[in-house]
Image (cartoon, rainbow, N blue to C red; front, side, top):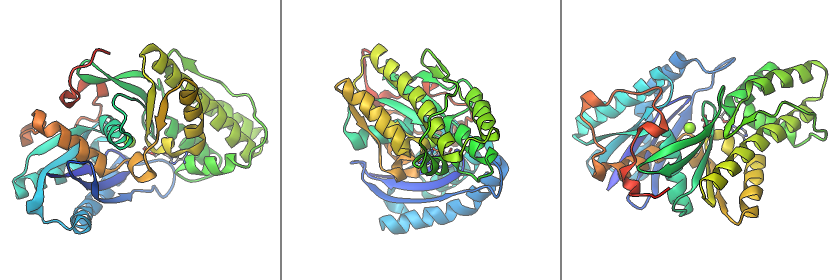
Length: 331
Ligand code: AMP
Ligand code: MG
């Protein structure tokens, strides 16, 4: 069976088509880029409304399939920005009605872990989910994915974007900071904010901007910021691994594309005798294929819902949605 999945939680509009073996038969995406400053939910939603029909067409052409060959339509129900989620959900409902197909709501964070899990072949990994709006360490236990640790203020990507914009740059900040950090030489001390398995970034943002105003070169600042922020993420991931007796880690989210973060987590995991896996960039960032794949797994477990029950859930917590396809777990 083929499932078409729609992603629209934040700035990325994306349509993916996957089959039962998790082969990505098509993936068509377009990212809303704010002209200045951060993401404006309404403008991002307008972008998605404009793009999604074209992306659906593109995906069908790329997969070389007709609508009649699709078995279900999945969409990201949450968490995310309300207007953006509604754009994707509306397109999904329209396709489900027009093509007479089951409609499957999917939790966006669960989709990140499920695509990484199937690509890696790892059975029960922990997910370090590091994106613009989300920063969480997640593992499966007793019927659902549980958030073991998370940011208590802003997402790590959001922190990098805000910092870069504060330094006079443009969104997205993460890749620009990564490039600058490669030229950095000096590590300046910055607030290191780990609370058990939780992290915080707003103090780090204030202190980083203060260093900038004191004249610290951008390259050294970027190097210091990456060292501090990614050490924090590596530490909480290690603590979660130790407490929850896991050995494998998969990565997800835009910030997880960062090579330095990947290297730090890999070093930590391998020192513990475990395995680390990061999906290729197009499946690590927000994408419709992960939504399609998770929808495909949920479908035989009563995953389809009537239109009336397909309301978007901007604050949907990972630990609120059951993941029955994972089966029993002792964890
Ligand atoms: P997402 O929210 O998963 O769509 O990812 C977007 C976020 O990832 C933005 O905050 C970007 O700044 C960040 N990002 C993308 N590429 C990188 C990178 N190479 N290093 C660090 N952050 C990145
Ligand atoms: Mg994401």
